Image (cartoon, rainbow, N blue to C red; front, side, top):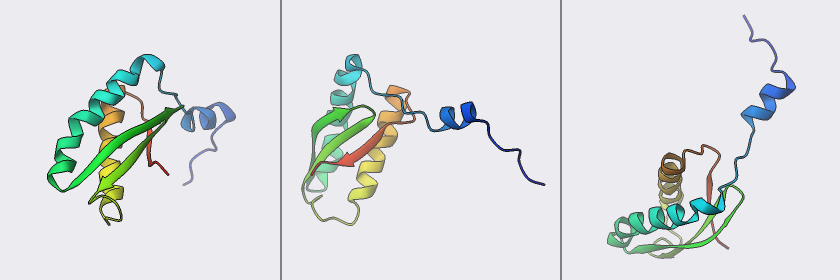
Length: 96
């Protein structure tokens, strides 16, 4: 048995990108600062570089540069930001 096709409104809702509002930027900064000590204990560091629309760009430093676990670190930051901002469309990407 197959599911009925989604209508256009359902697809738009499922793919919706909710930008991070300017008034939430301090919460983004506080969250990154709160998570930094855990990363620093492993010899790395995080720097908040930019927030645009729903994307948070972080610069990975120290032991994080080239680390195979850096994607998991960014994923952990994303999970925390999704929770504190109540915004499942938040994405966390490495800064160039």
